[in-house]
Image 1 (tube, helix red, strand yellow):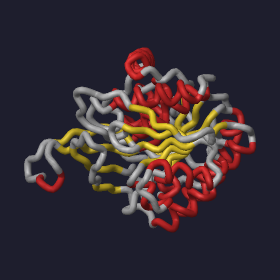
Image 2 (tube, one colour):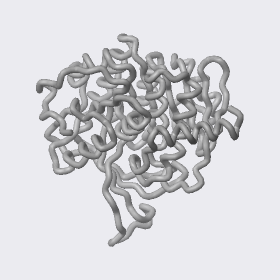
Image 3 (cartoon, helix red, strand yellow):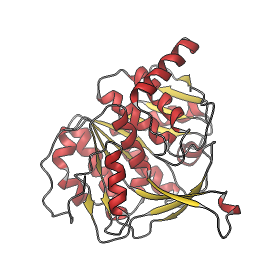
Image 4 (cartoon, helix red, strand yellow):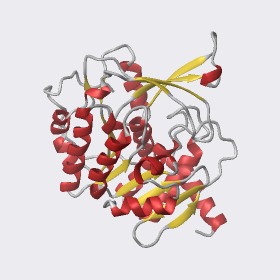
Length: 336
């Protein structure tokens, strides 16, 4: 499946209703075979494709949702395998736009704890050209589909991307759709004040706000305590808040009282890249398909746990039968 050629004025494919739309950036992922600070001449590396938007979209599709990616990709040689990989993951890329810019990329090394360092190349990338004009071209999709996923990374790519995220959020909210948002604060990409401003404007429009503690919480709501972080995010207007707090803890606060949910343990973790995106994509997909919040969160945590068995953001995208089986086993063990 290939994307249309592309300016924002190009004729878009006929609008169709989706369960989940994902707005954001797709990146080439270069995975080093050694810790970055120890990388030397001759260190092996492999290329794949990731970015929080692709990770979440792949998870949503695997969870059974009809999923489309709303993104801008470049016109360099990587665009063909990048879009091919997205399509292989079950994501509709027919609404992707093109820009005469290079695609963004990042370098990382294996990590199982989620505390990684990345080296990015995304200045003046195609993804950073995302703008309100693109959102207008996707208006019919955004107002007829069930759910949208986007993130603080997308909003931090450029001033026009910031405005695009807000425009899309308002369209979806105004049409009665569900919005899932992950602040995903990246200090090398944006400042705290800018990220806080976007969070404050997006939170009242969200059905699900997923954040991390301590990383996002310390930067954006001034706390290292998950329960306090949830309270402060809900005070901004978020209806439901999920706070991930390391490999084994997740806090859910939907206004009926915050409660911790144990996360299934992966006995053979390889790399935690994209696990949070996998949670968001899976949980949003299941909500869009009609599951209740508790079940959607249980499926999200199970899928995220399974995902860390793979290398890179889309190295391990579990099929839903596997996710559901792990969630069921975990429920029997924990009594929840």
